[in-house]
Image 1 (tube, rainbow, N blue to C red):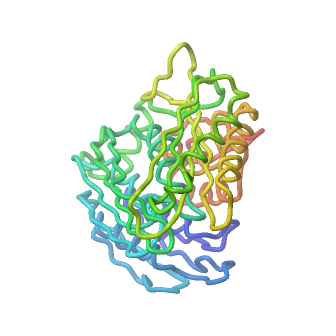
Image 2 (image 1 turned 180 degrees about the horizontal axis):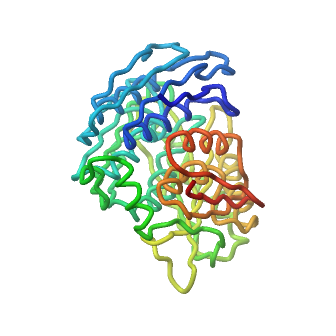
Length: 364
């Protein structure tokens, strides 16, 4: 039984989500205590319960403590059986955060799987759906063919956005009787991640979006125009599309990402170099200021000469652990990132080393 301190460093829900994903993959049981201890409202929130239920479906787990506000959770996985998921968070709970608990198991399933989720697509304290689709998922396509479709956006507080993913794995956990044999073959697969140099900036892309109620104020167009203005100093093509969406709640946001190449062209299937930045609209906040925030964050990342932004560094760690010998350079190593390392090292025979913002995963 793996014991995890839910208050370690950052002490957020990420600890539970990462533990769930790795428990399903490895078949190892875990107990986590003091969940979100330092938060204003400690314990499991509604969106965590849906993540637990989804992970439970993937491995027929026995679960103790999956209750609203619970401080402790015990999770006992059985035989992993990846299957289609249909999840309705029922609020603006983050779709992208919930996916952290299930997307890694699904990319190592035995067949094509479909995940349908209703919830929040663009919410505070989580990566927006456009970041997931255009920054994070390209890195996963080395290990699975993944299609993602945003069928409807969901802003706070009503949410009810709709996202659909289709995942066809390239590595099949079900081909092995025990996880250790699967893990040993992954180590030999030659799919290590190597992201330490930024390469050549090719172009900036992005999505500026808002609900249709804001169409008269031209919010999406103003965000896109302002972002182009602040990014013009980079002297590369800038392609930002605009969306006016049917949503249940009013909202807006912008996500930008930079595409790089190691040579003349970007290979989006082998070590893609993509990182991003975003900003979410707020009532009373000018569209131009929202765009400025996202653009300046992206420019700072580009100027850092690191090919991985601080959020991507956190998200990509499980893959680095499953394929030891991987190495990335991040613009910043956050407590969130260090917390994820702590959890991952509990489940896998791997040790993370950090030096000068370079993270390396080493077999133990």
